[in-house]
Length: 315
Image 1 (tube, one colour):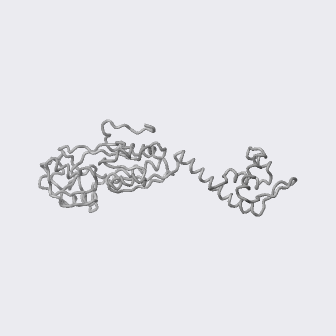
Image 2 (image 1 turned 135 degrees about the horizontal axis):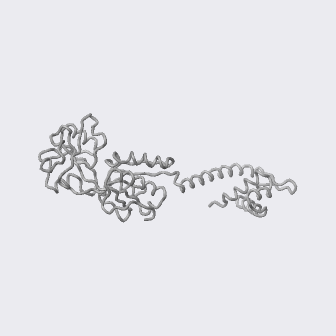
Image 3 (image 1 turned 60 degrees about the horizontal axis):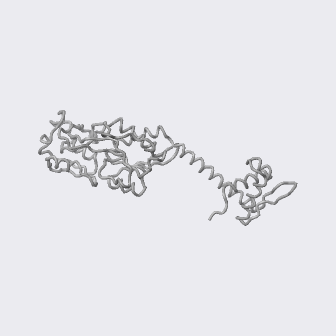
């Protein structure tokens, strides 16, 4: 148990520097008696004599006092650094935010979120964890990330605050050379007999293949992957189709093949994009500012879900 205080060390350091209790008292806005009592307490808890006192000459550090002064100066410097850091956190200038993101949402939204928030709060360090749904939930439960941006596939509403940001519907991703690529929309009947390229993510909610089957289309699965870019590359080579909510701004795959995202005339239902955090975390200044950055980016690129409220601190 620590028996001395930083305040006592400050009194000690000031008195040692000025060589006078009266001078230290004037600088610190205290009485000489209060300074003397503070130093006496420090000597008592340390078991050391820190000063030799001379009525006409003031005070002089003992050998032990000189050793303590060096250590006290280091501690006071660290305390000042900590105080400056705390002030920076309170003023929302500094901090560290760990952000989990579902892969396809990371491709589309993480770069503009990082750019926007970094421009507004340049001393806030952002760390992105890109992983599948269940792992993101686990990271959030364990406190290893502060927020997650994901499709809502069964989030724990007892543990998390969940903020809806947008609703999206899947589109059919096709090779630009495919005969259907120039259609305004395609139906499930148009896709009959075409191989499906499955992007699989371990989650508790239904995936796109499940939605297709529920709607009456049960395609042959020609590829199973966790990589959206691999699926896009295979689509570009004409190996089949897949469903995606987002087409990256550059419609060209790694292999230089063009792909197009065509609306699906059969409504498979919306998917809700949400931002989840642990209960009450959104009231922290650093987190609430980051939530606003996410909202701003999502609002500019996607439609808001019906009845969604924009985040306000304290609500």
